[in-house]
Length: 82
Image (cartoon, rainbow, N blue to C red):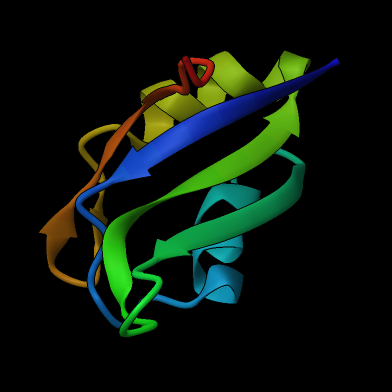
């Protein structure tokens, strides 16, 4: 089963590859995407990482509060869209 993790407070210049790489040290990353502004194409400072269910809790514990590009990340399980 796949779980999606919300990653907030990303540095503006973070790439999807860098985001996936940061999480890959703690388990298998299935995909990573950074949300961008539709008009400007710039990062909105948050993204999502899809991981295996077995790795999700470990990744949240390891990455929540971790530093990436001199910013402290906020990581938790993503809530479904309403």
